[in-house]
Length: 90
Image (cartoon, rainbow, N blue to C red; front, side, top):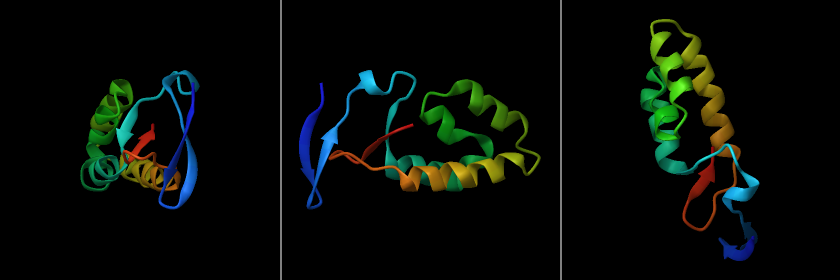
């Protein structure tokens, strides 16, 4: 079930796990901070419960590949709408 909430002068729908079966609800600010400062090591993926992706970032941390992918992760996280508790689905 979804419920309607009022956040920052806007009406939003609070979504449940049913709509996001393969995602985890994480704090938006913490996720972005982890991605910016420790994204090359995949810490933000470990925080979001994506251990396989985090391990891949850790294995390839000596290359620039995780840094480039982290940039996309940060942009995608900035674009997601937060709920009243400052959480987003990742």
